[in-house]
Image 1 (tube, one colour):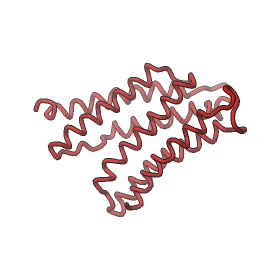
Image 2 (cartoon, helix red, strand yellow; image 1 turned 120 degrees about the vertical axis):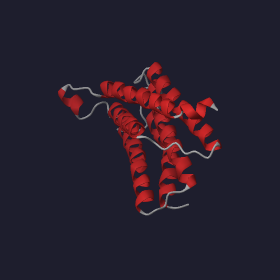
Image 3 (tube, one colour; image 1 turned 90 degrees about the vertical axis):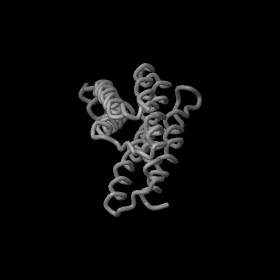
Image 4 (cartoon, helix red, strand yellow; image 1 turned 60 degrees about the vertical axis):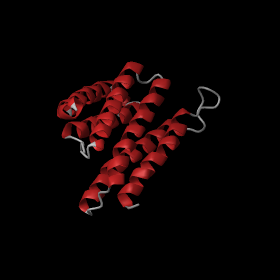
Length: 185
């Protein structure tokens, strides 16, 4: 269990903490303490930041492991899925957008599993990385209620979510096209 894998594990452990801060309201409509939503947003952003950090450390210090190759994309998918499902529950994201994003994640995970049987690794593409970055930025903006831009009447969260949706679909199609050989077997 090297440092990059510990960071990935920390990201997974932060998911229920993030969800608790975002969703626990007692009674309904009241927060447990002031700025509870902000704390949830900060936890999400910190957890998402560990993705780039663990990958950087793994490559720079030559600490890439099979466990890391498995856990890192899983942690990303769990974090984004938890955030989207929570935001759907809160009425901040429409269910159809969350469904498309989650369906793409399941499809790519399935393709990677099929490839793994043949000992083929399907690495994240540049489009996949852009997809992840746009998803994290959009979710962060929504979690922050578009702050600080909302102070001057600019709301970017939902438009950014549509941009993330675009890259989600495009990168999903890209994975399907690259995986055609695997699907023919």
